[in-house]
Figure (cartoon, rainbow, N blue to C red):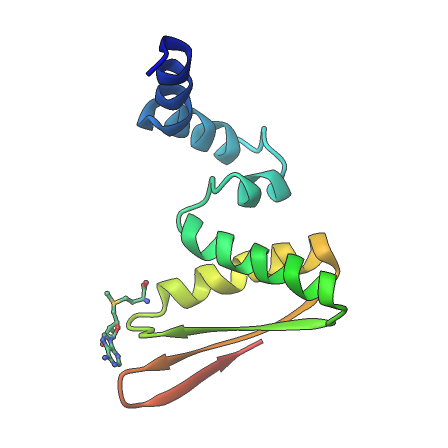
Length: 111
Ligand SMILES: C[S@@+](CC[C@H](N)C(=O)[O-])C[C@H]1O[C@@H](n2cnc3c(N)ncnc32)[C@H](O)[C@@H]1O
């Protein structure tokens, strides 16, 4: 592997750069939309899925997306989902409806 490639991977995938970017993002030096796009949030896997869904929905002419979390537990994931959905909704002018399922207790709706 070329040195430049190694360097590039180290810089982009290493914890160091991510840490610096997270700090910059917490200090509001990085716009909200970029934070989600770059995964500079606590749950980048949630942000990625929601963002992709918005892009797909827009491309297909849909006006809203439904996001569901299976296994809500204490609800922190659902809160993160709602926060990211609010931001993405603004960025893409698309509506989100969300909710989650707890083990055996059905839906915990949100909007
Ligand atoms: C580690 S917690 C994650 C909670 C939340 N999603 C978060 O990220 O903060 C996993 C949750 O999934 C639920 N769960 C795991 N397997 C499940 C299954 N097969 N059917 C229903 N719920 C399940 C557990 O009861 C638990 O509430």
